[in-house]
Every structure is written in C-alpha cells, then in structure tokens.
Amino acid sequence: MQIEENINMDELINLIKFKVDLGIDCFTDKIDLKNNLREQNFKNINELENFLFEYFENNNLNFVRSEGNTNAKILLIGNKLNDAEIMEKRPYGGKNKILLEKMLNSINVNINDVFLLNIDNFVHSRFDFFDVLFKYLNFLEPLFIINMSSREIVKFLSLHMTYSIFSINVPDPSLLIQEPTLKRIAWDNLKLLKSKLIIPDNK
Image 1: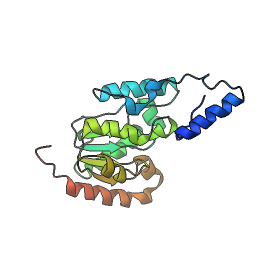
Image 2: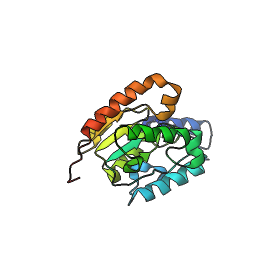
Image 3: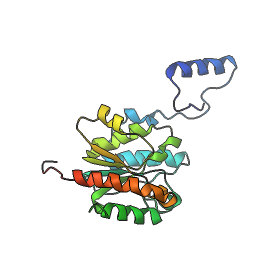
Image 4: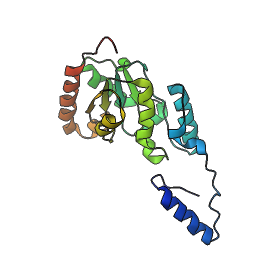
C-alpha cells in the first residue's frame, strides 16, 4: 500500500478500512519500519548517510553524501541536485561549484572550511526535510548556516535548537547563473555573514 508522506493516523486508519471493505490487500508493498527516521539512532554522520543512501538507492532516488569537515563552523545547505552533482556524486559540482567557491572567497571563506550538505531533494522521498536536517545538526553543531535551499529554516532553528545559529538565505549558484539579477541579494547577505564571522574560541 502506498502511504502518502503527509497522511495522518486517522486518515491512514480510514484508508485501511476502506480498502478492507473493498477486499483490497492493504499490505502488498513492503513497509520497512526502519525507514522511520525519527526513531533511528545513529552514532555519526557516516551511519546516517549509509542509512539514507540505502533507502534512496532502493527507491531509485538520487542521494549524494555530504562533504567537508564535521567540525566546520559554517554549514551550507544546498538547493536541489543538478546533473553535475548527480554525476560527480558531490553536493556541488561543475559550474555550480566554481561559482560557489568564488562566492565564498568574496567573504574570505575557503570552501574547505564549510560543511556542504545538499538534501533539498528529499521532497521526493518519504523523509521530512526538517527531520533529516535535525539529525545532521545534532552531529555538526554549526555556528552559521548559509541556506541555499528553498526551505525556510529560521523558525525551525529557533524552535528546535538549544543554542543560537546565525542563518542567512543566499540564492543557489544554479539560480544565479540563470538569474544574474539575484547577485545583489547574494552579495548583501554574504556581507552580512562576513560581519558575523568572529568565531568564539570555545566553540
């Protein structure tokens, strides 16, 4: 039985009853309970990504592992995967990575000092984007986030994180290539981040 991502328990029960009344087998599909991400405990990011990779591969979805130093103070959340990322199996690839490096260099940040995470394509999976992000944040504990995804994460951070994370929204390199008029927004927000990049010694 195909279960929609946002179906609630009452709707699920009614759906099952409806199919039973019609004589339809409700459980012809395999429902692997371990795919419930909220109930999973992972020792590290590698375990988390092994779990996600297996799920995505089994469901013919694209998944790329994160990249960078897990102790990095800056987390960059990418937009949807493009052909270059899928081909290179990296969070950023091709022209997108070249432009990203230039954007970071403009505020004196080296791409090697940023943890790259591209999970916005999770909209096509049964996993909730914010559940996945929360799992990563528990391991990373960044001080800053460059959000290039289409998701609004500020409210989520304020509700679910026990410490303050400074977050800015910056258009993804692929969008900047298509819409050069967005470069001003990107530059203004990157300058704002640059002004905050005085990282405490105790973090």
